[in-house]
Image (cartoon, rainbow, N blue to C red; front, top):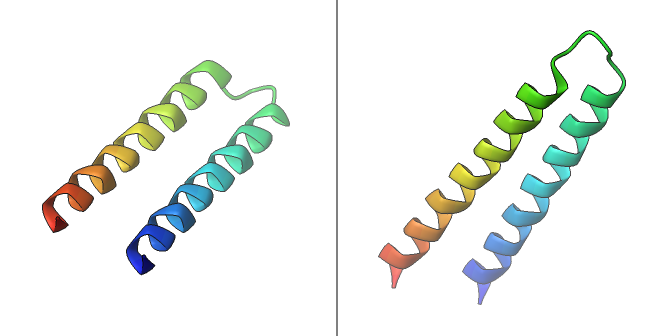
Length: 59
């Protein structure tokens, strides 16, 4: 139960950070928005996969 809460908390933090990054990007015209958004999405997927695999190993 505690581990599940930690994973949900992690998901919330990942989502919050992604939104902050997207907001920051939207305020700067000189930045390549598409590239940074792509990197942000890839990072989000990698983190999600990492913790999913870790959770599977803990079972």
